[in-house]
Image 1 (cartoon, rainbow, N blue to C red):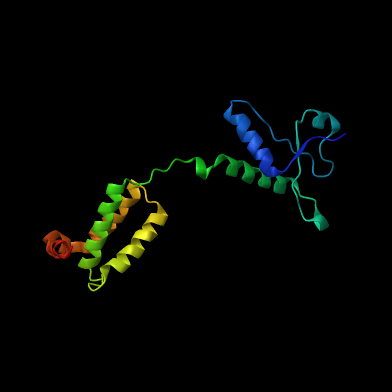
Image 2 (image 1 turned 180 degrees about the horizontal axis):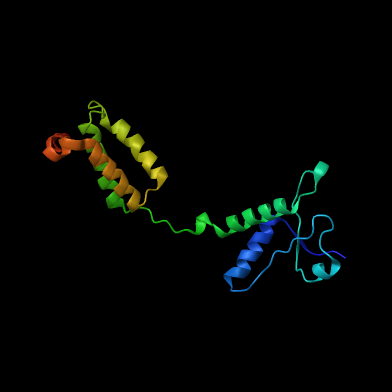
Length: 163
């Protein structure tokens, strides 16, 4: 008699879906030497088949538990489900202005063609899709890099005159 078979990922998805609705699920592992008895199999809804090397397709219990535990963890962690709010445009533009100022202050910005580097940095930071917290971290780093020049206003005034 055959039971519906799942691979470890499908099993993990079913178990986490059941758990999300408040239902309980159990993973039952058979004995290494003999597997599950027919009476034990009768209580199961699905069998999980872990694809392995056909030349040595047997896994021990610890390996099987580890594979299923990993898949359960990955099913539980859904990066796409985590809502990550990108920083508002105003915060990003404020960061870019601060970055330009800091690069000018520390002598890194090429005064002849600052737009080229700033455009590339803008593209880089757009790809990163920074959130507000990350923007604040980067602005803190910029403040530290600017050091005394920013506190004295020297670098800021020179940058603002150029803009």
